[in-house]
Length: 224
Image 1 (cartoon, rainbow, N blue to C red):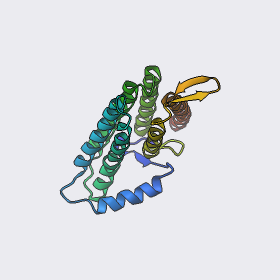
Image 2 (tube, one colour):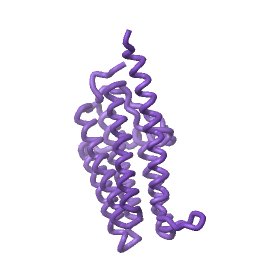
Image 3 (cartoon, rainbow, N blue to C red):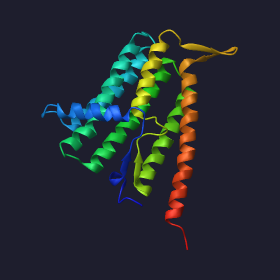
């Protein structure tokens, strides 16, 4: 059951948009100029997420910068999603290097994005900090499962990185006119509500996944 290392783990992606995304990425990989390689795309994905966070922070003074956030989220999707597809299409895979680079970029990207939201005042610092912690805990669980079980899940409960980007883009459009929302008699930041929902959802994913992984490993290494 156990893979030699997490880079050999079977990749599982079952999010809502996976079939469409795979077809689109393969179409793009076939048409990518030879001079563009996976490293270029990984760097582009990193820059996209950094700029999205920067534009979030800048939108405190100019809310129109939220449109640029959406643009750079699209840039991030292009680079982050296409780099691995291009490597596999050209048979230029580097499993350990690719695994590390891809996920360390995701780590910094989450910090840029959530940090930008907090700096702009769209999300309170406590919600942002807790959201980042739960995100990292879920990511750690996925990495541990990849090593121990040989299965690396790129999505949970039909939600993956692409779906999250789309939700953020939609939220950013609403944010232009609805920064504050009323629930019963109380007023809350729109992204505090979204952040709390995300925290609860990811926490549930983490708990369920941890129980299932522990059960699978216990049965695989049951003591006689």
